[in-house]
Each structure stands twice: as C-alpha cells, then as structure tokens.
Image (tube, rainbow, N blue to C red; front, side, top):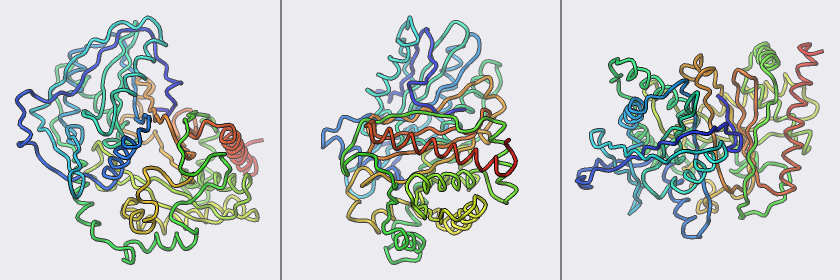
Length: 466
C-alpha cells in the first residue's frame, strides 16, 4: 500500500460503475436510531458548517483504490460493498446539529439499499481519473448525505475498485480495513461461500464511551496535566513549525500534494535494525531523524510537534471502520550536540510520558486550554505535524502485491505542512501536503532533502552504508 496524491493515481481506460447508498422511500426518520458523535466528528462538522457560512470553496476527502485482477463480477462486488456498509454503523449514519452535542441518525442494516449507476465508458486514463476527481469533489461533503462514494473502473485486464469518504467517518487504518474486508467478502461471494457474520465494533459506541468519560473534564483537572506541561514548555497548545512557509495566519491556500521515497527497502530495513539496536521502534527513529533535520534547517534546539495516535488498542475496534485517531503533542531535545542515539532516546522518553495521556481527546484540550482558537475551523498557524503508518502491519498485507492498494488524502486548500510517513515493501516514503506558494515549495523541498540526508548519514555512520 502507498499513500499518494490523486495526480499519481494509475487509472486506465475502462467502464465506470458506481453504487450510491440510498434511504428506502418509506423510511420514517422517527424510527432511526439516535447516537452522539465523537469529539473529532463534532469539531469536523462544525468546521464544515463554518466554511459553508464563509462561502469557502474547499474540497476534502480521503480515498482508497485497489485492484481486482481479471474479469470483475459486478453482482458479487455489489454484494461485497453492501455487506461492508451493513457491517459498519458509522457508514449508515447522517449528522444533525440542532442543540447540544452533534447527533447521528443511524439506518439499520436492513434498510441499506445501494443504487447502481452506470457512468459509462472512459476512453482514456485521463478521462477516467477526471471523472473520479470531479465526482469526489462534487459529491463528498461533511454536510451532505451519504458521506462516501463507491464504485469500480472496469479495465481490459483488471479492475480498480474505488472508495472515497469524508473524514468524519474514516481514518487511514480504516482504509486498509476496507480493502481487506471488501476483497475477502468479494472472494467469498464469487466462490459461493457463506459470508462472515461476526460483528465489527461500532465507532459510534466508541464515541459514546469517549463522551461519557471526558465530557466533564476541566482545564485544571488531572486529565490535562500532560497537556498543561506541554503548553508551559512550548509556549502554546499548537506547536508551530519553525519554517517560513510564506503564508499569512488565518488564510487558506491551494494545496500541493506529493509523495517521495526516502529510503528503499534495503536501507529501510537497515534503519529499522539500527533503531532496534538502540531499543527503539522504527517510527520513533524516524521521528528522531526528522527532529535532527528540523534543527539543521531552522536552528530549533527542541522539537515540538503533534502526533496522530491510533485509538484502537481495545480489541473491540480492531476491525472497526471510523475515525479512531487522537492528536497528541510531543516535545524532546534536538540540540546539535546530540547524536542520533541520544535524540532517539529523548524521543522515547517523551513518547512514554505522552502515551499515558493518549486517550484524552485533543478537541477537549483545544477547547479548554486554547479557547481563543477554538472557534477556528483550521489550525491558527502552520503546525509541526508528524504521522507514521506501517502498512506491513495491515490485514492481509501479503496480498498487497496483487491488490495494489493506494490511499489518497485530498485537500483543495491548506494553511499548514502535513507530513505522513509510511513504510511498505518498497521502503520508507513521505507524503506531504502544504500551501502551493513559492516559499512553501522551497521550504518544504529543503526540509524533505535534509530529512533524507540525515537518514543516509545515520546509516553510513553506523556502518550500514559505504
């Protein structure tokens, strides 16, 4: 699996079929189940409503594509997609904010209906990609229902399934879960096997439990002790990236999205071995290297940043679809006098302190510790953001050579520099998104180059490269 900009999508000529979730004509809204959204979902929905009031023309969605070799069985694929929607409650809900917390109205699995749309033949790869991009931009919106689109591009030798979601129902690991579950059920339907009936934990149940636990916390309470310590150390809740991106605070800019490979598989394996030699995990070693690079490019002697952390530690959520991600700050020294092993150790110590507070919702910390910014629908200024995912740990990773899955985060506008690192069979890559203005281009290009240089130097100094 790889994470790429939409411009890197390997489409092909073919025939596009789409399936849209529909509500039954006789469905009485009074009989819909009512649940409460998570803190992430409520903030996301409020931000989307604010953007609409401001007439901001911005498109945001996340998608995944994967391959079905040979001739696709369309009825079997439709059955697999319906089973997927039936299994995950968050895909059957719509959101409504009348008073109090954001409410979810949930269709029952029995009410799921998929409407097949034949979108016709696409004579070129560009035509197929253009159709998908226009459809995702036009039809996926936080404030519209349904909150996702599904379909397949049928080619001469293989087919490409596509699933695109609003972030309010999805995170990065959920995309890998979708690939695995749709592929497995599709294979079961084609083979005439009995479909799996084991329930998946509901993200809305997770959201309800989170609300019960954290709705009543206060700015002075023990739950936010780690957060208050970070604010005191860094000077604020939001860790500003110490780079000049050439943008104004409060403004959104057209986004530029690109993916580069930092290390090939051989060097990535060597770097992981080196981290293990120092009793460190791969992602912390990578974070340490990024911290050293940031010191070199900016002179910063301390790394202050945000880490998105998975909230799937409870086995109930291992196969669940939803937004199981919290954002937590981290701080550690990156002084020029420190060696890579010393920076890695500092990152390890800080991560161990951070992980004790990983369940405290970032949105609540934002509301209580930075209320002057809580009304904003975006970051108040460019933040330092590091994300890592190891696709080798995803379900049925050994099938990826055949499925060729790709995840695609899309944002038409941004005011920060997001950095998503990932490990797959090809090595370690970086997908980044930042304002498409000259200074941002220059600053982020220099930053990427120095990160790669640091990684190579660390390997060479440890004797892993000549």
